[in-house]
Amino acid sequence: MCGHAATFAGYTGTAPIEAFSGDVVRHRLSRAGDRQPNCALHTMAITQIGRDTPGRALLPN
Image 1 (tube, helix red, strand yellow):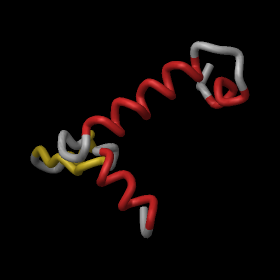
Image 2 (cartoon, rainbow, N blue to C red; image 1 turned 30 degrees about the horizontal axis):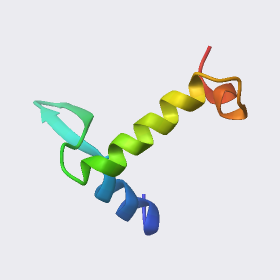
Image 3 (tube, helix red, strand yellow; image 1 turned 180 degrees about the horizontal axis):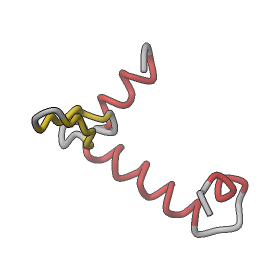
Image 4 (cartoon, one colour; image 1 turned 180 degrees about the vertical axis):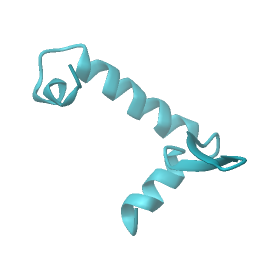
């Protein structure tokens, strides 16, 4: 990510963080950031997948 997208992801706490365990590199979500926008994003996503909207078509089968 770069530019505004990275700034937004960092601000809302949705930017992935690398978590190392030996030779294995995994990614996890950050607990940092402003939790209120993070909660709003979560609520919007849950609402969208719960209804028959174009965004629901993006879900894997």
